[in-house]
Length: 132
Image (cartoon, rainbow, N blue to C red):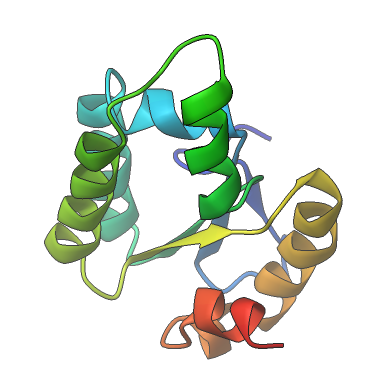
């Protein structure tokens, strides 16, 4: 079923207004630059639905930095981090960015985010993952 925002949600009877938007490293960087306005509108829909959006990036911050140095095309990472912070400040308690480390880690993490849903809205999941 098409979602108004995000890529994943759990169905009834476990639905609790929690959504997950999964992004590759490239998609994340594109979303925080050229797709920023579109993503802002997506976040506004999150508020309209009184929901929460976990943005799961299938990379780590260290890997993004490394790929930016050695990759074929460099991005303006300070601009990307700035836009990410703007979103978290503009939509407090409505979204959270999680850098999972890779696709396999995301496949493990996403179902748990959806099952625990609202119980995790106020948990700093990145801190938890980084210190597990």
